[in-house]
Length: 273
Ligand SMILES: O=P(O)(O)OC[C@@H](O)[C@@H](O)c1c[nH]c2ccccc12
Image 1: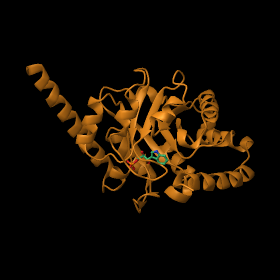
Image 2: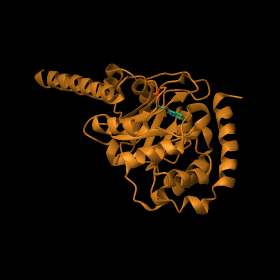
Image 3: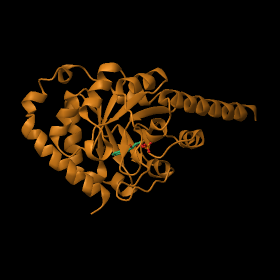
């Protein structure tokens, strides 16, 4: 059994328990369920390389990443220092996330919020909406294409955006790209946890321009981000590099500034020749 299969199995077990405890009828009565959502796509198609900053306490590949997780404080910092969107881990067993983290971020900031979890069931889509998410992650490695498109349609109907995550060109070929607006490539193989930071460029090379392209995982340096931007990537998803910083907001701002300066310098150089 791969790491991903193992995670999926735990997620399924937890899900059955929650469905019994909190029926859908209760979820849809939560106030967030009625509030409007913020669209993710325009936030990620900004002038500069957009950053989706992640709130994540632990991960199966790294163990504990940040001991004290003050979610409102982190969300505030991310917004203040220029993140275009925030991703919140809600998976409890492997990432020590929770739906309460998502809700705490929702109460604090008006940036688009992505529920980062292993979504396999319509119940989780309703749950995401009920706890204040604006978007969900749909992982192609976890779902067959029919299932993925069903969850996608349902999410859209509830007013949620979807970030569809692939890891290989094969997974990409199985998707109906006419429908998809935001496509991410996880640089980390979820079966083995190996990271290749150039993967996103490779896999997203041929997707239509209309689709917003996101590179995910293992990103740390301005060098990497400048390279991604030059190869047509619209946004990056960064967790661990910020979560390990004493002040994640400042770490984000420093990275943004460096990327902007480097890109500007190379533009000036090009114009001068
Ligand atoms: O912390 P990193 O290496 O910067 O990665 C963030 C994000 O890409 C990663 O958390 C992630 C991407 N896809 C996922 C799917 C499930 C769980 C986690 C993820």
